[in-house]
Amino acid sequence: MGGKATGAGGGVFRARMEHYLYSGEKKHVLAGIAIFGAIFGVPWYFMTRGAKHQSHQDYMEKANKARSERLSSGQPSALKE
Image 1 (cartoon, rainbow, N blue to C red):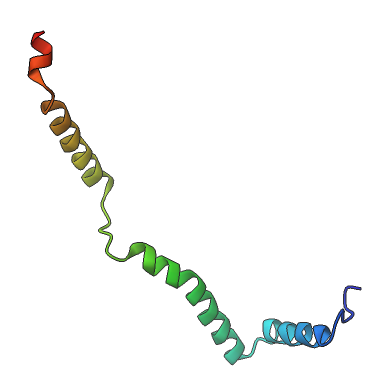
Image 2: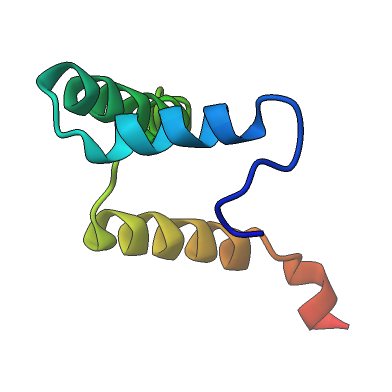
């Protein structure tokens, strides 16, 4: 079961994949690096494009500013009633 072909060409595909994975040939290694680079690089590129990376301090200052603006824009007439 484990090493036998289970369909037309099933064993051939597995044999080729094992050859590519375990051969250690330069072209196979470079192809593997390119494939992994594309798999992880493309999503990383789309997630980080246009986003300005901020430090924690920048984030906290922005949050404090927004909080103070929100609190200061409260309705003072509601407090007088």
